Amino acid sequence: MESSEPIDRPGRVELQALRLMMQPLPPGTFDIRRSDRSRSRILWLCSTPFVPRTWLRRVLFQPPRRVFPTIVLELADKSSGALLSGSVQLPIAPSFAEEA
Image 1: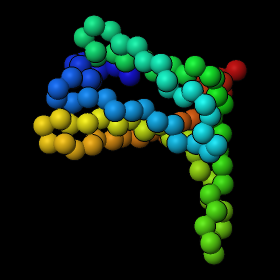
Image 2: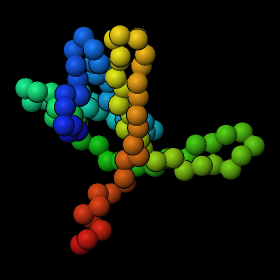
Image 3: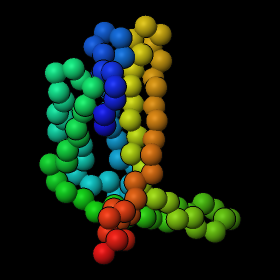
């Protein structure tokens, strides 16, 4: 993740977590974090590689629904105590794989 200003601001807005929403959840997802001095670039790594995949969510009396993996970023606003979150759908295959 890259921003024109710091993403993680200790004492003001702090990173809580980067979570992967996928079933079953693979071990070691985003457990390594690196950043530059200004904290405007943050890189999350997985100690164990994983392959994104879809799964079926079943709800009683409804047809099964295909669910795609999602990455959720959570931030804590220290002044208000609010939890801020945003999510993005993770592609099953990288876009450059279609170019071949």
